[in-house]
Length: 236
Ligand SMILES: [Fe+2]
Image 1 (cartoon, rainbow, N blue to C red):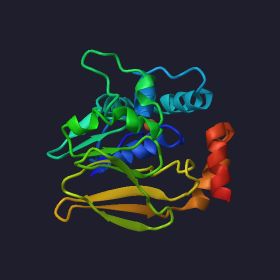
Image 2 (image 1 turned 90 degrees about the vertical axis):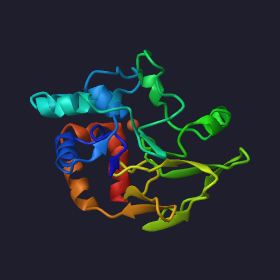
Image 3 (image 1 turned 135 degrees about the vertical axis):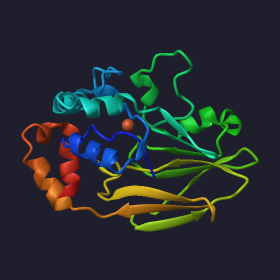
Image 4 (image 1 turned 30 degrees about the vertical axis):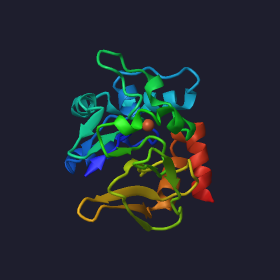
């Protein structure tokens, strides 16, 4: 089981999510939010609301050295036999000795696929799993070098796709929390069934009313613009 990063960040319960990840011994990569809270990255000055969330979480964890040590030690990538796990774009990872910056975590735009079309066939891993963009997506690079996006049904609880053994895939898992980017408040996760060469995308229900109440009553977070968007999605 892997967590694709951003265990903490946009919601005010980073201590609870970290505790869960640590207690269940879930292997995780570092997301930009862990790197921001640990002080490894400095945010873009225009990201005021993200900086507010980072400052809050840094304060929340300030007297929890075990949690801070845990996030400082998270790797950028986890490499398995035929797949790579990372938070963001496998083609913009910092080079050896290059200092990591927030620029390495730009949001996903499909036009970047064209940009990396020539690098992708040489990428050592057949499957790449990433998070960051909150919205599940699946891209296939065929043996002939063409890239195609698979449409994923947004309202299905479970969606299974058979993989083509001669293709490579970039699999964006979506987000468990903060699902405001595609306006569908359900938690995304996925299962890779190695034996049957299938991917199963899940959209799981959670207690939306409870989250809405806790956020609306949170004196600091309810004023963060990104959280206000999330509250509107939950209310709808
Ligand atoms: Fe992220």
